[in-house]
Length: 405
Image 1 (spheres, helix red, strand yellow):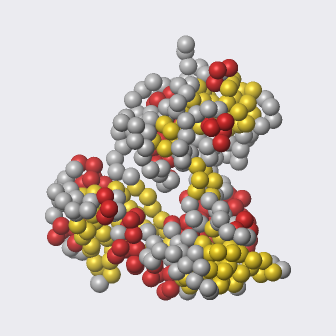
Image 2 (tube, helix red, strand yellow):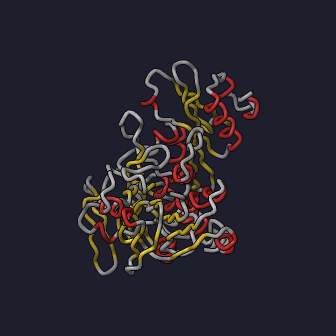
Image 3 (cartoon, one colour):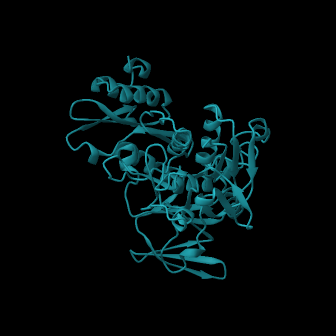
């Protein structure tokens, strides 16, 4: 049967990337994108420029509005309520049926809620509406308690002090992000909070009480943090309800192969909602970074067309806080290289880059602060399986562009 109608459920970066990839691969059939929030937009700026007010709603759109008509993509601002693959259709929340030969689920994820009394009063940051509400709350002089000092939590705390609010970061791990950027950079980034006036508390909430709009976050160590607003940045939960209701296999994510195929051959999936099942049956950890969502959307587009998914290089992510730009490629998790070693590059006594080397000398990962050329070089080194000179990696005078030659 010819593939003439594809419907993509979810207007995040994974769903959009799949739509764009389908057209770039020559698919000329009917293509519909269900995007409940309207025009798809980029989410990383929500905790950065958009929250600070330096980027507006138009600037964070993934593409201009005209792109969809120019590429023959039907944009429908509705949610799917049920999949009916045996009938070749998807049911929308209003009851209307949309015909589809193949369906791609890109349903994303939802923020994890604080599992303590009063935890449901904490704000989360996932949508543009969330960012709008948070920006309003972060007025000058407002006190904000941020639970979770990972990427999102640290970015929110950084934005809060720029906006004139008082911020307290609450996390049980000191320093956070060691597996992501290595201990040296994690300690540097943690130290920047105090330098910028962000308080830190090494504990976890046990209760949040509300007394006439004034919140008190009681912690496990017996202390408490007073706040006008509480923000939870403790990760996300894959949105699998639609998939599971339709009988698709799921285990902390919709189970897919490298081409995005689910347990139903008429349904594919991509993005934060998915979890890779390797050929040997083992399950990979879910990846929640922006680039991973883009890649999975591209892979699923290939799968929908019966083509081999593209080969991707080492994974990459970035974060902005307190005026610095953090990037990492590959892995800095020493548990994945117990016989390896970590090399750190210092500039004027301050760690600027960290590298994880395998026992055989291959580069496994690199993280940097304000050193983008190094990340690009490290990515080439990792993807080519090269063995770099550790002395050159640690030498601040060594040109990153020459390391991958």
